[in-house]
Image (cartoon, rainbow, N blue to C red; front, side, top):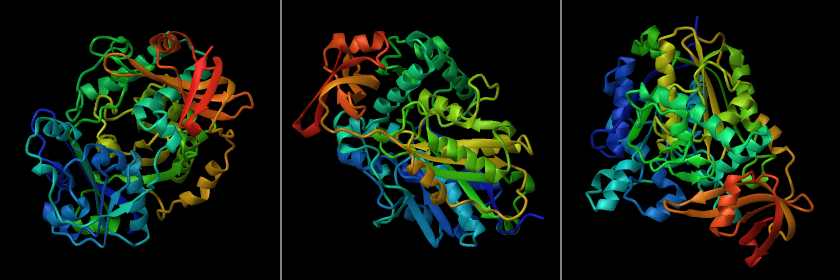
Length: 511
């Protein structure tokens, strides 16, 4: 008999407004929740009894985005959803930024249910940058992006900025600038040529696009060849070397997704059919050494490896037992590093995604993994007894959460290890000394070349000085230097670094 306090996912729903106008965040959230209720076989009115609501933070509420765009916004999305459901939840939270948020919320909600703190939980998120940016650019009616109670939500999660002020000053505040630095380090670590590695990235993500092509909810339901993805062209410009546009997550989409989780006792009371139930067998949360400048290296992620071990150990399974995956796929480096840490071979025949991935399915801000979880539940229901692993990643390979799912009920009570206990292992990892104002001979540890739409714009370097201390710098912005760093390997290249304005502007000149 399944423990009555066992948490179980009973419904999931998702929606994409690719061909029709998006109705704004409040309606998008409610649509996903309505679809989740229908999936569970429940009337929407049944969710008036939800005691816990979690809404994934909208991208526009990120401090930098909000300050830069000054967009129209809802004050309290969880309160608006509660109002729409006629619910009076004891707990309602709105997450801080991070793509780990959906899986982290599922882990948190499941623990609350197992501990008797909750019985019926609604988790949801939406991204609407596609329609918002068009509306703001055209001066259209922005009222659909507002609404709801004029209150402040309870924020949930880790609110630390993703980078230091010095990293930000040198261009390392955007994922499209930072993940290429992981990729270049990984290429050098693997000993591949630039051309060979470019082809490998195309082959990897072509498989993702094939899954998106068969997904009715995908933003770009089109299969692309490895060459089309990896090679520069008029339609596929370089964004941050070595990533072309088709190797980048697409965030200007209109998508929403939701899940409903209940205790087994509540699921029984609601009459949820056995074939609708999907269980979280194992889960974990961990963060890397926080700032990119502090990482042990740029081609691995000890936090992903530890997260995978803890989630699989809790489930009593190994990576070989997983029939399905959704590996977080904002950029190729995220997939390759995660697979290496989890022990998944690059040529493993199992698909690495159930959605199509962030560049092709869509990268709806912090909420992509809610779509992963809904899609994983759908696939597992079609393959009863199989197991699937979902990985989630926030900031710059910084915040991680994982979940192991199956239709098979777990045996015994649901209990997970406190993430704070194993986080100590990551926090204690050695890392290089940082020098804020470097000077003298130095070597490139990793780098990227950032492009605008019509030219190469700047180079970003993480390097080591003669004492082995790490620094961040930019390169000269002349085209010859920047293109040279794209045409031949830059990792390990010597040069000279200098500093100005108290380290606010460091300059690395390659030899």
